[in-house]
Structure formats: C-alpha cells, structure tokens
Image (cartoon, helix red, strand yellow):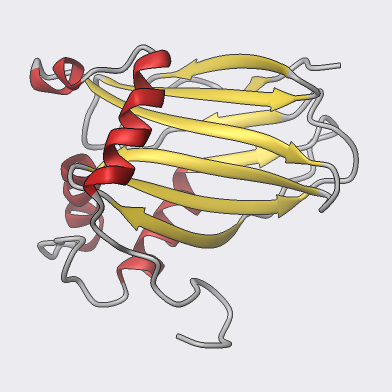
Length: 181
C-alpha cells in the first residue's frame, strides 16, 4: 500500500499478550467476555486530545466476529478479517460511515486511518484527525455495528486535560456533545 492515500501498510497481528493487556484495561471499563456470550454486543472507543500534535486520537475496540458480520452484510461477500484482501480499506471506509466527530460549531473533524491490531477475538482500529483547540463541545455520532446488531451498545470515553466523560450509543441514537472544559 506504500505511499498512497488511505490505510497504511498492514499493522495486523495476532497477539495473545496484547489481548490480555487490553482485556485487563477492558475490565476497568466494565467489559467481560460474558457480555458477548449472552447475546449482548458492545464496542468501546477511546478519544484523547494530543495537544502537542494538534490532533484527536481515536481507538476503537470491536469484536472480530461482529465486525466480520457487518462487513459481510455491507459487501455481500463473506469477510474474514485474517484473509480478506484490502481489509484495512474496508474497515476504514466502514468506520467513516458509522463513526463521526465534529467541532462545537458543527465542522466535521476528518479522521484518517492509522492502522489496526488484530487480536484473538477483537480488533483495535486507530484513527486520528486535526483539532484546533480542545475537545469541549465536540459532537460524536457512533452507530458502529448497529445495522447488524440492533442490541449493540457503543461506549465512548473522551479524555481531555485529565478529565474523562463517557457517552453511550445504541441503535438510532442522535449525536451527543462532550462538555469538557
């Protein structure tokens, strides 16, 4: 993929250690494997302001099976993340259609694909975008995976200046504003 616009060289890897480290953090967010086993579907997103770089950094944690189902429905082809050509382009395009950030005055914050890490049962997808000031008043829309999993719950943690706010999204929810100051 080299120097072209869009997803960079593949960052996919299977790592049991990464999975253990992330799940230990996920337990602090209240997620356990049981949530997925009983039919509930959940995704987690972390948004942080990098003042030095002038960016907002976004990390999505999605369950692999849920994402494969959504991408299969979207493309009409069976998608397996481990062996589908151009999978990063598919994921990047999917995220841009179902996850959206805007400034307090309504200007879209364009998010670019940074890469992803594939673990045993989840994937961490990384995006970033330019932001002029802070995150206060930022508008978030998150409908990831709700088109194929109507019970999907998307949790978004936004951290700025040492303060964190959490927003939760379900099917059909309107965009929400973050009031960090």
